[in-house]
Length: 94
Image (cartoon, rainbow, N blue to C red; front, side):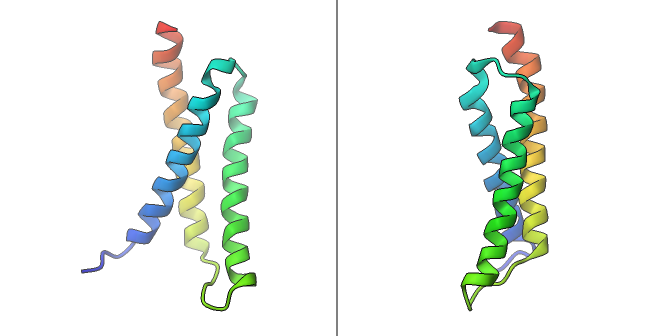
């Protein structure tokens, strides 16, 4: 049985986890929010490039605007979630 939109959920989760893990890797460096936003910008740009390359370099795949949207939304929500957790938990205890 196939669930409609399941592919988009996977795209969202991959980029959510991608940004959260990368942010965890840099949490000890005490960098400002500009660096965190650079992580999100890179993740979004990477997602767009991968979708475009699928269309250009393969004959069996095509670029999907909704995949790009799911990738970007996952990256943004991952950033916001991590930012909230970092400010409420990490700054309080570490």
